[in-house]
Amino acid sequence: MNNRKKIITLGVLFSIAALTSCNASNNIYNKELNYTLLMPSGAPTLPLYFEILKEKGIEVTSTPTTIPAELNQNNYNYIVFDSTKATPLLKNSENPLYEFKMMLTGGSFHLIGFDKQIEEVPNNNDYILSFMKGNSADLLFSSIYEDIVIPAENYYDNIASLQSELAKIDSEFNYNGDKLDWAVVSEPQLTNLFTIWSNNGIDLNKIIDINLQTEFKKSHPDYSFDYIPQAALYVNKNYAASNEDKVNELMERLTSAVNDVINNPENVASTIEDAYESQNEQINHFGYSADMIRNVQKDNKNGFGIVPNEFNTLINDEV
Image 1 (cartoon, helix red, strand yellow):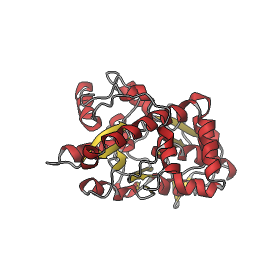
Image 2: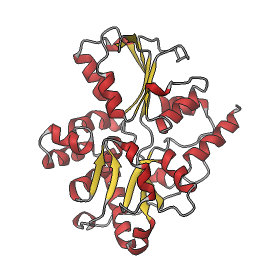
Image 3: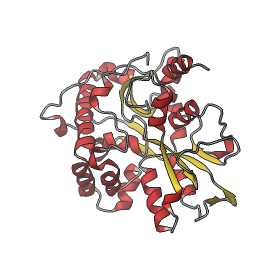
Image 4: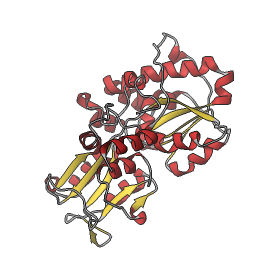
């Protein structure tokens, strides 16, 4: 497959509608909008952190495989899901109930190599684990390593389940009796795993970390964006038609929140701690702790892959 054809294919998979950014007003934090929203736990909850603390109708699930079916139902005012799955589903629907509103995360995916050298790449004889077949991470991996096929049984339903399994590897990188070669993971789970492995006496110097966003841009030089489409916010069109002001107010708050989580992560972490003192409570509500925000977002590295507001204005239907 030539490079141009790969770009076109990814353009179709990653296509989403553009968002016009807005400036936050002084009273946006004072209004409770009383909406309902369904979303997966993990990185996508970070730009919605203030909403999760404020609004009572937000449902965060650790089983994201249940979300696609909800795109055909009127049960929620908003849904957050992987755009590479949600957008094609909506485009193929004769009368879609939801429409794209905002990209939240832009890919925080990594390929971890166990007992590998930095120049090594996976092959079809390797034992590779991943999560959510066909999602953004999987598409990204497949677009870079085109000839590699990960067996269906090596996928987990969500990143949390994969993290739990990867935490079990021993110092020789054995998993379920076999030597594990590679794993496709995302932040913030990756940072958590490195802590777990270190505490378990695993030599981190024998683990290589390949940033899949960086590798994708190397192999696709025509791709001009700094972010890979991942989790996006979709609004119920029926709700939006009769609640335009409320939708606009939510977008203002999200615009402000995105700025906070990228530029002021300590303030975000402290706000979450004020609401939930226990780390277990924080993890139950978000999928990670406030300390994880500090570790992954520090030094302006934006490890969660939160899409800056200005980049939402650059994304359109033809990548």
